[in-house]
Length: 122
Image 1: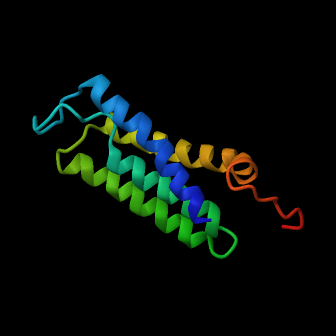
Image 2 (image 1 turned 30 degrees about the vertical axis):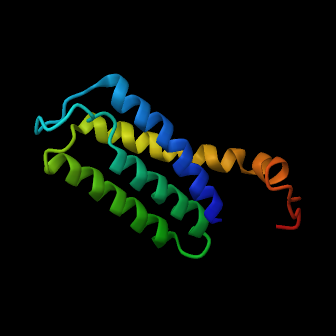
């Protein structure tokens, strides 16, 4: 369900933006002081976890491909001297957890915000 992905992105944005400005960590290439955590990695791992959760029953390869792309994203951020490994690991954790939190709060949102009743047969 696409709205869960949107909620995940909203949840992810807060900690990533806040930590980038609170930690003030310089990037490896000395280009700025917004290195920690990696927003690209957070976004990629949030998307990978959403793909895994939504499409696992159809084909586990969709989730595997998502995680492969997310891992490549993080590795390339380090390789291209844009982030430290710790930035990528933290971003990956934030992204993954943002998606898990989005799934956890979805029943509450469905009931209280969207005013929908869940179909118990699914």
